[in-house]
Image 1 (cartoon, rainbow, N blue to C red):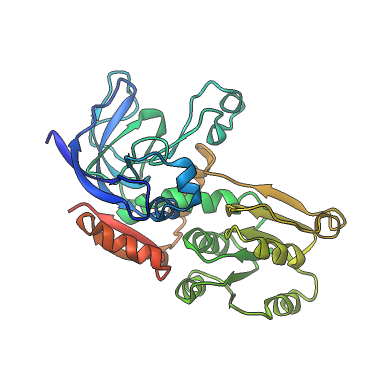
Image 2: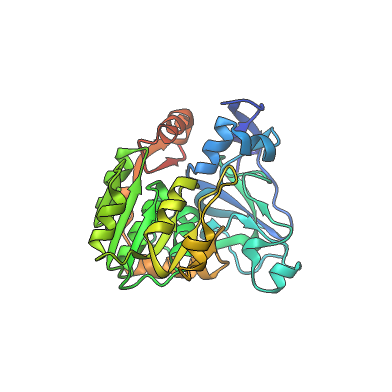
Length: 347
């Protein structure tokens, strides 16, 4: 095995500010594994880091090797590692947990009080090799497609969100057709939602994918979405709203379209505080609101495995593939919004 590797670093605190670097291959500690990366994908978080928006400015400390969605093969294991073997086909849970804080002890490792996120707080995986704590490594089924193995982080976000509500046989409104919203659409269809409505205000390309993965009706920049959805639900409203935009306007629209006694699940991240009429839209409507972050460890991953075995098809969402050396071209495509998931194969 070579002593050095090619890796993508956020090198300077500015838009772009990214370059390839040749760096030493990391050595696994006694509780770590070293993985040869075979495929990785670009997340919205990576776009935030690349664009150097306000979130990135407050969170990221360059130089940082970023990226967190990937799959690969284990090439070395630490002395204390017993359940992972050289040659295993793996991905990883990107929320690094301590296993001893209150949240971890209560079974909520995904919101660990000492949480570190792969490729945000620690060195990431846009590289030929990645060092990962063994407790965060997930063994993939040997027959799982490489592309699917690489997108389990965002798909897991969608699955966590979907299973936080009662979806089978119910009418569902999905706010936002970004990759996670599209994954949620596919999952809702697979587990038996009655009607699936999607809204998208920015990218027609993504709105079209929503139809391919199971949406009954997609509203792209449609000012009449409210009246059309109310008509389609006989004036009752939808049973469940899944929010993926981080848009105050979308949340208020979703609350108005939610039936009395319905459930709203929020995964979108909001850049500012906003006002809503809690009295009429939540309290008097007996609405349940649930926030979501990350994936339940390992509940979400087992659900994901089960969905794959049941034939979940997310092929239409994986729209672009590049060689790793074409990282900047791939990032431009992802930033354009005219894509679903963008994956990179190691050269």
